[in-house]
Image (cartoon, rainbow, N blue to C red; front, side, top):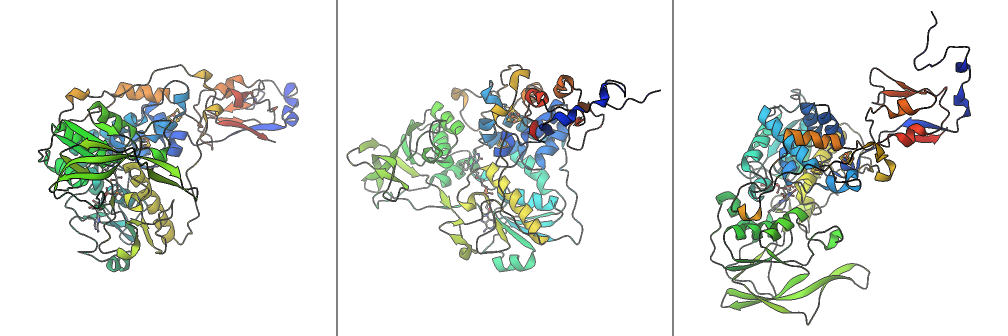
Length: 563
Ligand SMILES: Cc1cc2nc3c(=O)[nH]c(=O)nc-3n(C[C@H](O)[C@H](O)[C@H](O)COP(=O)(O)OP(=O)(O)OC[C@H]3O[C@@H](n4cnc5c(N)ncnc54)[C@H](O)[C@@H]3O)c2cc1C
Ligand code: SF4
Ligand code: SF4
């Protein structure tokens, strides 16, 4: 019997004699490319990879893929501003994939089914690392150090873990039971020694941490309010936005008498406090911001720092936003505020070309309010590590988070001053942990950056059917009265639908297009997964380099390169 090699279509002695591969000037190669959702995720999640597993029905595998990067998916699936969706290629075709909804579903499923993090306990002689602060940055650092085989001591000033996620993010966005259940499972991992009510600078010194441990991560966040006053006047009853919001989150109510309140600021604290005061029955809540409401055509440096979702929900709930305005003067009766003088503000280039915010004289208007509350941001509370703090922040190298001028100390999250979200804090903690592990092994930290995502114009979308996105239910504004969660989750069916809609950008779909359409039958299908993770290999003896496979590949996984 004649042996026919795999992929052969004729017997030796016939056309197989003609190795048409010699005609080629270009050859196709498989090239795994990062999907844009992966490239931009601040936490480092590979959404394409877990959507593919959801599509195969492997929910646990999908969750394990997420927690290889981010141990807090039930949380980030709720609070993340999901830049992955703004970058999703499918938005150029019909609508972006509801990635955060899938992430949240998998996080909740893991809680429901009590899936354990796939992390082994460290060996007794493993390195010992210290992490300060149990916010998302510190938690992620501790988790990834444990994944890297280290013992971790996690110290936290407060009695409970969670950082700002627990003390300030309102329950209508992040219910406390979700926070508790995700964090309890994480902190129960053998190898993490959690020490609450232990404050760096009070209960333990920086020197002790440096001498007792082989690496140190600082994730103290920004817990100290900045000083505020307008034209040197400070009202006698002044409380900061964060203080009031923390009272609401802890007690579910804020004592107040005002009928009309002005909040100065455009970040999370300002917007959430405005929404909380509306829930408390304050008739008029004004938000005064130097910036503009975030929108696709508003440059990032001129947009409010709170997310578009939260700002638009605040507007739906009746918050009045005064964009490009600043408080020029407080109008006081005795020590009490009765009004504000507002002035138009805008960013203009100065003589050195740098943009600076400028107040326009002659544009002053008066706003009558009973109370003014500053919510202009916080800074690092430096007590105990003053030498490391520079202008209210810990200055770190952008990717690995090493503290400039202090080798062996790493930091990330809000403390670095240029990050202000949970997913950024998670990503900072993860990268810093990897850096600490590398440094411990004597490796150098090469400069690195996020991968570049494959563009929409590199896909062939003719093989996909239009399908509307599944969206989570949102509570109508009139029903948002207290702490009830505003956004619901996707159900299992909607999650599968989203996974099916994913274009698998830059990755093999196993769709068989290359195998069926190659005119020379030079694409061989493999039973087992090939070395590059696909199910196909090219038979370069016969591939003429026509490029049909690359053109017809829906996901941009096949590229033609010079031979
Ligand atoms: C009102 C509000 C709403 C927000 N909403 C969102 C949102 O919807 N989505 C989003 O992504 N982000 C949101 N954020 C931002 C987000 O909460 C932060 O970016 C994130 O929590 C920062 O994480 P972190 O770990 O750097 O710091 P933190 O979460 O602040 O944690 C720092 C921890 O360190 C501890 N600590 C500080 N100093 C010491 C010390 N000396 N010794 C021991 N422990 C110490 C603190 O007690 C704290 O637990 C919001 C923030 C606020 C204020
Ligand atoms: S953490 Fe945020 S950006 Fe990353 S996948 Fe989840 S929702 Fe998207
Ligand atoms: S289509 Fe899928 S792989 Fe492509 S960017 Fe969107 S979620 Fe990511």
